[in-house]
View 1 (cartoon, helix red, strand yellow):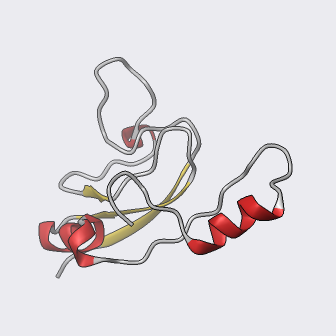
View 2 (tube, rainbow, N blue to C red):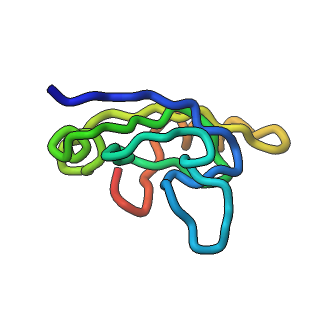
Length: 98
């Protein structure tokens, strides 16, 4: 049976277990041989990250073709005007698709 771990990734940590230049990684916090990250968060993001020991589950969570809905909270600088808020309400298309 696949195992799934949810981790609250801190700001400044890479969503991977190793880094050639020594930046903080998941290995700083977790010792999980055989687990893989399902999805990712940028280094300058924080939030819930899923890890699993089963490749099929990892694919179902992370591959865009499975269309798993995701929600994000964003912190912005300044005050967006009503037009900017409406564009956000309509949805944002990311570089890897809607």
